[in-house]
Image (tube, rainbow, N blue to C red; front, side, top):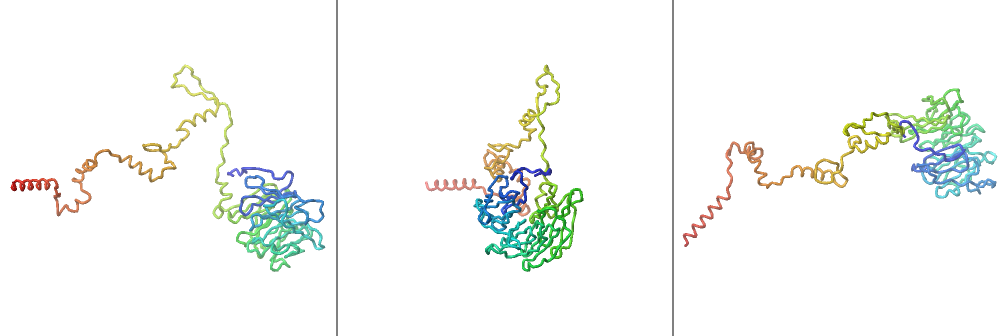
Length: 442
């Protein structure tokens, strides 16, 4: 993605169905999508289908006996600790656990029931940070949670009057420490719960308008704030993003996002950027130039590619048929021919240096030659001398005698005249003495 913020690929995973939730896996290689139909789908990063969950038999009364959902999905999310496991909730009154190795049948079925023991619709489901608890917000205003280490027959945590009856709980979010739960209700409230004492909420924030069943809430990466968006009707103002203190739910900061509702939001921990999805189909990303890393900063820094010029005739040229060949200009019918001609010109095309193939200077170092070998080779070529080594040394004898550098300056005062041992004269004297001795003997 460049500065124009255009997607490199557009796809339609479900025809004629509203997309409810999209989430990357913990490894980042696949994406889980839940839409208005009964079958969740997993695609890879290139948009290619990996698997699609099976649809159950809608004529069976007991939902525990069906292999999949039979009604519209409301949400789906990955297990934060097991990369091959995810859950989904549907209007058929169940939360189902799936495994990517077997999409033809769900792994476990969890039924959500109201106070009378009848079916109630789960509008949102999620895992805790450690993957041990599955929580679901239901249409009757209740929050139900199960411990994955126990059977799913009875709830481990249950709050029947968490939000107003008939108001969809649009989002549940666990804190990073794991004991605190935030719930966003359709009754324009946000509540904070402690799982260690689940009878009463810790705090409640009101006057947070919510018209969407997907309005999200989340905890900041440092676990000190809770963030959520507000909804507005068309032409009646702007949706706002509200930051509240976690313990007291006191408003710390809020700002207008756009002249529409702020529905979904995501605060990425590593990138330190906030992504907000709006009701009019736009997405906004907020980042800090100093504290954020990568993400939107990479898009802003990339320059938009130049649009290739369309094939079109060139401007008129002056034709001189009787001029000398050296003064004639080449005639091109289109810009394509001009580009091909410029490509062949090494100057206009900025052709790099060709690799070094034989003895010589210059050129580009190939992969088979290290930099040190290349430098040594060039130095050897520059210092190449075919003369005799003795003659090469004697070339510098005069300069060494006039301007000595190494040994001679040390003996300039004590031994101004250098005396060398002459081996040839000694050998001649020894030969003469040996001849004299031979003559005397004779």
